[in-house]
Image 1 (cartoon, one colour):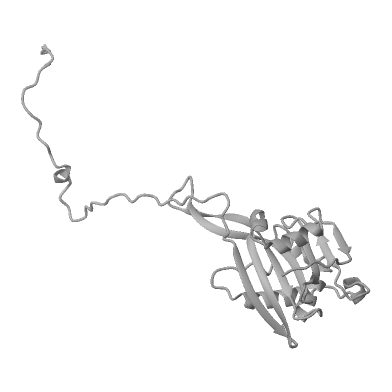
Image 2 (spheres, one colour):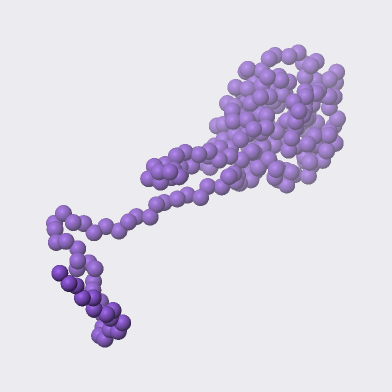
Length: 251
């Protein structure tokens, strides 16, 4: 059979008709027109932020009241949040508040005994994000920020309150420091500044619990010959040091 090829048509006269593609869908009761849903993705930062806070509390035990001020911030921001009097106190004692775990004491110009200490903790949050290879499934990831709290406990007189002595006991037991060291996820004080938390409901049981597991030490190891509380510093390298207290005015 002989086939004759016609020359290519190079010109066209006329117009194209616009067609609604929905009209070409099959007519069936089982056919459903659905729009694809976009995959929800969550952008999670490498580290989360922690809002700085300041709280003022009060606690009475055995008719002795302790006034408590608490500052909490990310570890690298704590120096900007604590008052100048505490910064001066740390500088005088050679303490780096962002690195050292410490407890110091003294009396203010009103003759009231104060105990200043800090603690570190790692604040963690868990996020759910789609898996890279299976976006329809989710995986959990942790993000964290290292935080710090600085406390100032003040009594009504030069005599220590039971709560202040609990702090002294805790810091004089080198085992218990592990709950409060930089990066700790087991610091029982870490939720005090969480939204909706009543600070006293956390602070008192936590301090009491840490005090109960602290080894008992004689008073002459906790105080000098004049009854003044010896300071305790755990430096960043873990060294444990006890000094005689030096008194500085603090408001």
